[in-house]
Length: 452
Ligand code: BGC
Image (cartoon, rainbow, N blue to C red; front, side):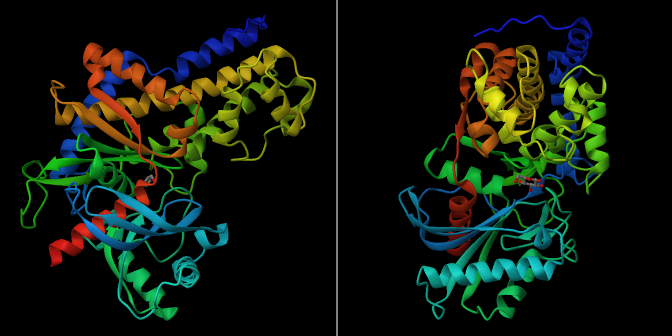
């Protein structure tokens, strides 16, 4: 339903300006794809690049992997421990799962503090689910940060992202850090069989039963993607070339050739990882609410919105969440009642219709830019693998932004239509729930069977 309201001229002008500022045009899309390809090339050859293109030491599974595994999933404020069973016929089931909330003091304290918390959580999971402390059990660790893998079960943390800063972990082998914490807590029967990024887990889990899946993407708190690359294209690879393909964790969140606004610059400057994760800061769920908050603060200062509520409204950094934006953009009622309730909860009562409409439009500017950039980056991977789009490509995507944000998937699909016309039909975006748990277990199974 289209709601028409008469906006004041100054406001209308500013809105037009913002429309242009946040628009990712057809021309931008083509430039981004070109730059993406060039950064991919550099990353695969071992040259300095904003795309790290990290070999994941694993290819897509065959679907016959079998066994029971414990999987750990660390990548945001929730840490999960799962018990996963693979039946060898392409089916995986989660037998048990526990979620533990990581406190800010553990995310931003010392590495020992963070990993002690992880080991304690594993211990209580094992106790609750009567998992024996005597029999050896294989563990798969989804660690969703940039890690330079040196093996299927080893890799050093390059840098923290998503607000984590735990000291003394960057440059260390994550599996060793975990093993030391397990030892401190007296857990001696757990063997880390695989270390994986969440994108790799997502791709592996989806392609376990959908063979056409050749891209794994996360659109959640953070953002990233992976795809299988021909070994012959990974020219920086110095190891043995046992297989034809290997999955590459691109770390696309760090791609930095994008049109940036002053709001984005402010967010980057105030973040603990200034100059890094530039794509992530435009696209992922951790930042969208903050971008919107910056825009609203600007409008407040220009006296164009919430006039009677002063500059205190939405003053807290990161106080506006992407979930709030979902709620605002999802309100399709005539009087925008949900938006009204949200504003009242935030101390803004009796607001006129045009402010509510404006708020909804602002959310759309920020979320549509994110969806268009995400689809552009996916298009870059597809055209890299298959320039003429001869094959079908299923993209397995996990993350609440993709799963829950109203209209997000539709905007991504529009980009494919703009770029590929009829051939856009060859691209399917599919939700890949829980890839980071199940996928890691499958990787552990692949690793275990290749060891045998
Ligand atoms: C990390 C990636 C991860 C992504 C999604 C990013 O911040 O650097 O390794 O895959 O978040 O969780």
